[in-house]
Length: 442
Ligand code: IMP
Image (cartoon, rainbow, N blue to C red; front, side):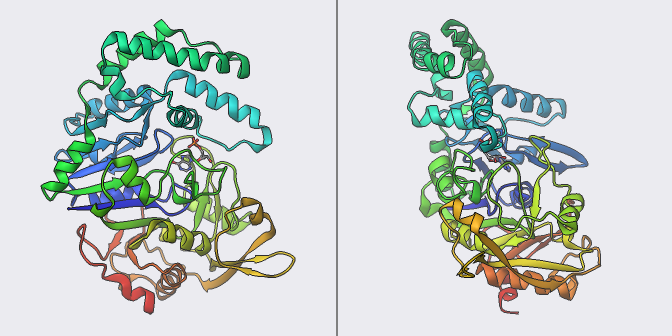
């Protein structure tokens, strides 16, 4: 019984969808385990570009089961829109399953997200305004509504909704100056949601346990990234869930013993969208090159992403927390054309000069640290046609090798372009051995 976890190793937007798409051929079940429609993944399939936020991109494969797991939060309107997209393109949703334990983002969660961001002023987190934080607050506060609740006896559901309104209305009206929940209207909305989810809802834990028992491969699809993890990221500039590999067990409902391969997806540089500290951020020509050539705009919000050099301090920390068995290095092609490229290998205290190699827990520390950069010759060649490590320019090979060494993790997959085929792969099948580990010792 095996599961592969694909985890964002940075601040999200690492190109996980392409890696998922690449590995999906060899998986039987694809599972979203956390986050919600704050995520955005773009997949090009048979010449058509699809943008999904909630539904796993594996739905494009007719023979896969796609699970939206218990750890996710679901905004029903976005779920409905994505179903429409599938229908419009004649794509079957027969394999799509939704956990009865997943929490629902309700209309007032969106309003609260907006109100809280406004109240934070210049300390705003820069959330995606998809109601993620407020939904998770209600989950942790044991007030939330779950998909399975929609299928309960109507009297029970009506009572549950009325209780929710009693709990939330003083906060909505007195703290946020927002309209109160109308219990009967929300109850009717819930009945609409019931019809929406009816074909898909199931006991996904039981389904996944059975899949594992039958020897099927699970592909666990993380959203956001390790540095946005609620517990391990740059708190409070984080999302309200656990993108790290442990989250795959908690949010997918699969046992840790099932995890065989943990792939950390990382760009060959870094990006971040929204607020929060970012030690290697660039404000110069190189930063503009990364933004322009890398098309660094968010799939969900369209916001420009902040760009900077690869941060091996943050990556080593992510590797510690996740237990990466390998890295999937994306967007190496974006570095082409830069005369020099850099890796941040450590931080240095701006006044004392002290060297810091462990990512600090307290983000205030990051204000007094600066990156220690190791520089490499760039390469002018377009590498998007390279299909093996040997075809990469020597300078690019040296950069990848150093990156791997500084992170202490072998590189198993290198993406050199948007195209599905623009992938250098040492691991053609889930569960096979990483043959690129030689890169770490070159
Ligand atoms: P939230 O998840 O919408 O609450 O946003 C919290 C933080 O996570 C903000 O800085 C967002 O920009 C960031 N974030 C959320 N989802 C993503 C994502 O899919 N990619 C990159 N950043 C994200």
